[in-house]
Length: 142
Image 1 (cartoon, rainbow, N blue to C red):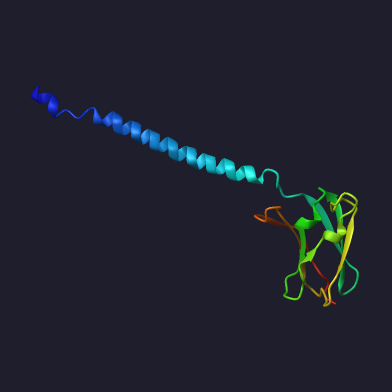
Image 2: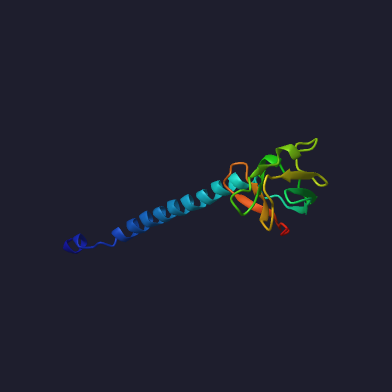
């Protein structure tokens, strides 16, 4: 009977089970986090669009949607690379379907010149978690 009191072989399976449960819980937490995070972004994919710029004069640019997805104008911004360029809303562009669609054109004017600036059309997700530059143009130097 004395030999049975020092036998610790029964401890090893218990520790193994506890470790397996801990690993399973950790793995489920990581996978669940990824799944829930990706679920938020499923309906908010970046639109694919071809947008062109035409500089009418020193202060006015015309933006044309030539090809691709219709875009909610509230998710679009026009931004330049120097301080005086305002970030403009595309709200006034929306056609009959309240979308910036193929064939539609927007014109924007600023009080100073576009002179050599990099101008970008930026799309922001509805929840403002992501943003993507859809089109870029460099204004002519005048």
